[in-house]
Length: 185
Image 1 (cartoon, one colour):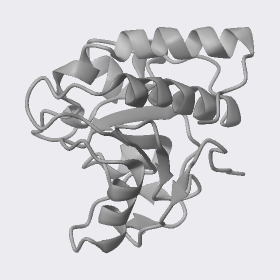
Image 2 (tube, rainbow, N blue to C red; image 1 turned 120 degrees about the vertical axis):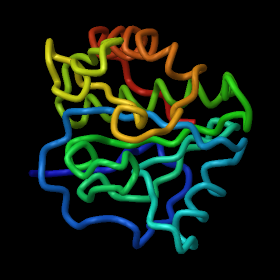
Image 3 (tube, rainbow, N blue to C red; image 1 turned 60 degrees about the vertical axis):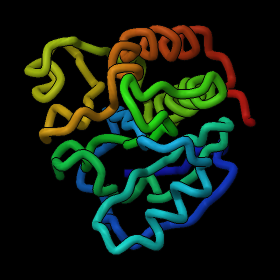
């Protein structure tokens, strides 16, 4: 398996909280909420310096910055499920600290660009979301988007991003089908 990282990254701080290398090709996207309106740098620095065993591949900041915390060739410790994290790119997105855990427009737009870039580089032709947990965790009907709450008693990614998973798939698929370049911020 050959892996590359996104050229959209504006900050890199690789954490030791990871498993090297990942065991499966990338075919899934798992979006999380930070529950803090941090920048990508703040999130990556947290993962690099915390004693908690947690990480994500990417962080999207409130300002649209994109950080790399775990190389795509490696598995992050993000979804409370090793099998998911071995096949997924995990992305933490800056969000409000209270329900519905809204994200800024800049963060949302950067997330769309990042997910489209990840899909292009990893030969994921189409993102498929299902509102049914069993479809998501079993990758039925082509579903290749999961959420943290599928694997743990968490509310992540919050209602704001959870309710937009279908829209995220639509926007990314529009970029993929048009062959558009992903915008560097």
